[in-house]
Amino acid sequence: MHINIDNMTEDELLALNRRVIVRLKLIQQHNTLNSMIKFEVGQRVSFDPDGRMRTGILVKFNPKTVVVMTDDGQRWKVSPQLLRHLIENIPSGKVTTLRRVEKD
Picture 1 (cartoon, rainbow, N blue to C red):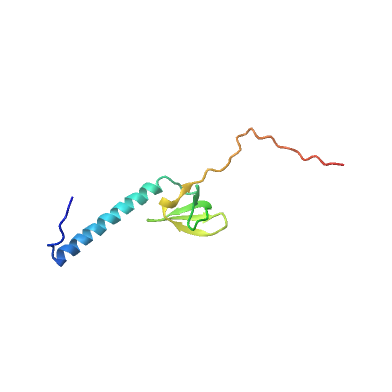
Picture 2: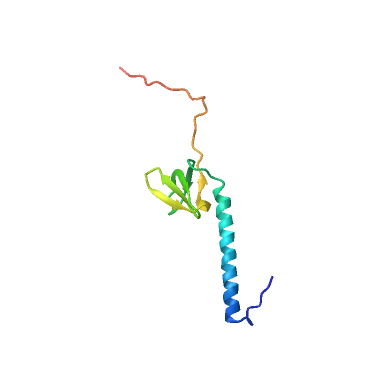
């Protein structure tokens, strides 16, 4: 679809701009919601805000972000698009406990 804006008045351009902004916000809300429904409160997640992976528990959903309490006690507001499910190493039940043998 091609819209010729060269002949539009200032009022028409402003009206078009408002419609574009509304549409973009709707698309962003849709994308955020689609990302949020993949997670649940209490779930372990990870994210990488500054080149360093952080892990923690998702504690709250906000309209645009989620709140994650990291393992080091920090509280982060994170875009749900940046979250990853954290799959932890869980023992399979086939683990044998080893006893330490003291040497004489």
